[in-house]
Length: 151
Image 1 (cartoon, one colour):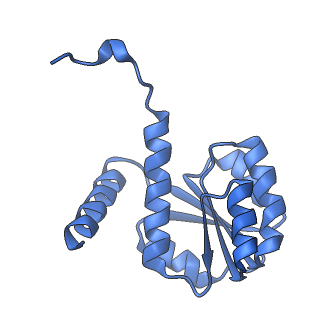
Image 2 (spheres, rainbow, N blue to C red):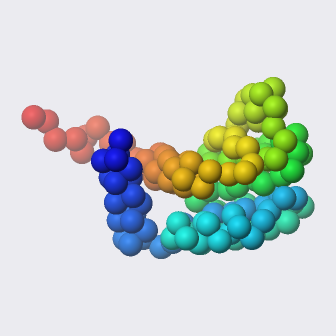
């Protein structure tokens, strides 16, 4: 397991060194400075937004990942759906203080990339952000079978 963590951290560091810092949009009614600091410590560029502005920020900024940070998980469903209508491939992570299993299932069914409960495990958050960024990167590469080398 240690080699997997090492390779993921190496992948992330190589990605960050070869490319601009990914912008992570964080918004909601429960955003703490601790989350912003942790995202900075991950080597990424956090952008803090209020709950009302999160949808317009996500359209104008094109962030690598979006974190909806709410006290109640149900409050995140409306902005989640609005963002996904405008950006269907956005990677959105919902973090909430109160989260039941049915709320988590509704949020995932609505299109969230993942759903986390507070207090956050920042290693898990980092893993989810990196996974979202890598999926965005891989989906942006066009597949052209004519360019494949036949062996």
